Image (cartoon, rainbow over the protein chains, first blue to last red):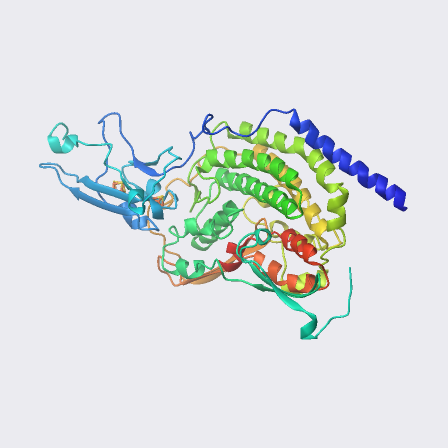
Length: 151
Length: 376
Ligand code: SF4
Ligand code: SF4
C-alpha cells in the first residue's frame, strides 16, 4: 500500500472508532448512580449471620463449634451453655472477626442445624479494627430457651 | 524489529526501575531495565512482592480449608483455579461428581474466562493510551460478574466448588440470564473490531512488536494465549481434556506471528469460542443433583489415599497444574502449583531487548500477567 492509501485508511479507522463512541453517547446510561440507585444484592454473599427460624423466632445454634473448626481463618469465638433440663446447648457468645473472614461459606455448609447464612449487607464500614468483630447474638437480646419460653 | 548492536559499555547505558508501583505492571512487578536512550538493552523481572506462601499454607490446612486460597492465586479467573483444586482432590479421592455439576462448572469457568479476557483487553488498551474500550469492556464484564454473583455470592474470589459438586445450584432462571449476557457480548463484538482491531494507532503499536518465536515459547514453557499467539495450538482443554470438556465442540484459535497483535487477536477469538462452549453446555445442562447425594461436601474431614498426582487445567492465562502429594492425612503433604504467568513473564527477558520503553509496556501488557499468581 502506498503512503496516501495508508494515511486514508488510518484516518478512516479513527473516524469509524469515533462513530462507535458517538453511538454510545446516545445510548442509555449503564452506570449505577449509587447511592441514589442500589445494586440488586439479593444473591450477594455478605458477612455471615445467624438465621432466625420463623417457628421459634430465634436462631438454632447449639454451640457445637463445627464452624469454628472448619473456618480457615479462625474467625469464630463461640461459647455455649445448657439450659436447665435441655438436651442441647445454646450459644451464649458468638463473635465473628470479619476482618479475617474470606466469605468462603464453609461454615455455612458445615453447620449441622443450618443456622448460618450469608447476609445481604454490602456496605459495612468501620474506622477501628475492633469494630470489625460482629456479635452475631446482638439481634437476639433474649434467648427463649433460657427464659423458659421454649424448651 | 529495531536492531542496534548490543552495547557492553557501562557508561553508555543507565538503569531504570519500572515498578513495583508502576500502573502498567498490573500488580507488584519490578522490571529492572538497562536502557540506552529509549532502547532497552536488558530487562530483568524482579518478583516476589506478593508472595503469600500458598504452597506452604496448603500443608497446614485441610483440603476444604484451602478452597478460599485457590481463587486468590489468580483473582481474575478464580473460578477456574477453584474448580482445578476441587477436581484434583476429587480425582485423587475418587469422589464421583454428578453430571449437572460437571456441566455447570464448565459454564461458570468459561464465563470467568471471558470476564478475565475482557478485563485484560480493557486494561491493556488503557496501557496503550486508549481509555474508551476499557469502559465498554467493563460494562460487559460487569454483566458476567453479576451473573456469577447470582450463583456463587461472590464477585471475584470464588470458593464455590465443593468436593462432589458445587456449593449452590444454578437456579431455574439461570439459563435465561446466561443467554441474555451472551446476547449482550455478541452485540458488542463488531464494535470491538471496529474500535480496536482496525484502529491505526493500535495496529501500529501492536503489529510486529514483541515477537516471541515458537522455540522461545517452548524453551521457557510459555502456555495459554501467549503461546497460541505464536502459532502453537496447545490448549489443555484439548490436549488433556478434563471435566465435561470432551463433550463440547470448540476450536483453538492460533496465529503464527507471535507479536502483540497476535496475542490480542487470540484472546478475542477465544472469548467467542468460550461463548460457543457455554451455549452448548446450556443446551445440554442436565437436571439432577448439583452435589453428589450422600457425598460429604465439606461436612466431614476428607482424607486422601497415599500417593502423588498431577492435575492440569487451562486457565485464562495458560496451563495451570496442581501437584498433590498425600501421605494419607487430612492435610496435603505437599501441594505444588504450576502457574502459567511465571514462564510467561520469564520469556520477556528475550522479547524485550531491542525494543523501546513504550513497547515494553505493550509487550508486558500483552502477556496478561497476574502478579499474585507469579509469586503465589
Ligand atoms: S465464611 Fe469462611 S472465613 Fe468466613 S467465617 Fe465462614 S468459614 Fe470462616
Ligand atoms: S456449626 Fe452451627 S450450630 Fe455449630 S457452633 Fe457453628 S453456628 Fe452453632
